Image (cartoon, rainbow, N blue to C red):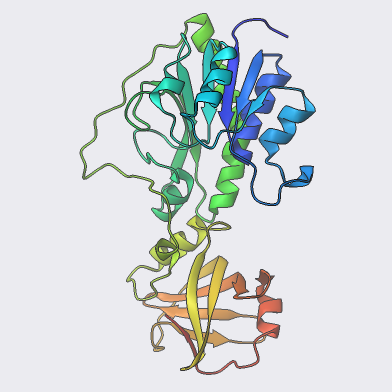
Length: 319
């Protein structure tokens, strides 16, 4: 195990795990890990976050603060005497944390900064129909996601790719860019570059996504906008609509995978047309054909099984 630098790793999601594993496998000296508190009902190990499981398995000191300004937490944190900190998928850090190491604290963000600052860059990149995105490492500073850039890696976004698929693709390269960033800092081969100043009209943000943001608006002119929204929210937090069987009977319907059918038709917008193996919803430029969905109170299903569970197949609509 390398003695220098003393690294504190900060992360709380499965996305974080790839970077942590890459560093530990390469024998870097991870003196401590900060992660989120356990979720409810997490007494059994299988319910722990992957970061915590890895820390326990490899006997790496671990802190799970609820309050990052708590005196007891800060006392234990400073005892690690970190030279540098690496952050991947965690909540905002107070200045007392990110400014502590003499070599700084750098963060990995899943976008090409300065575009898509915020907690949901992968989702919003697909929702907005981007053809490329990537990863950025940067030194944390006072303003959120605005510090000097260290490295960036671009990747293509496929036209039918979901947020889950794109996240998995970014995960696989996240460890290598974190490692390259760390080595570049240690060897002084990286020159931090200030982020470009972009006008507000050109700047795209990635705010937290609410349930209301996930509602599908079927009357939008472009079929691409609807299609991109569904794949940009799949599998989580997932796009949804209200499916009406009759005026007084309706369910929330989540949609995960679809196809676009560009076709002229005379159906009212939001009409649901069901055959033995297809469910399609009319929009202004054609139809959205559902491949995978989930009725409220049911499991996620492919379209064939979903259709088999629908008894009423006429006069259905969504809104």
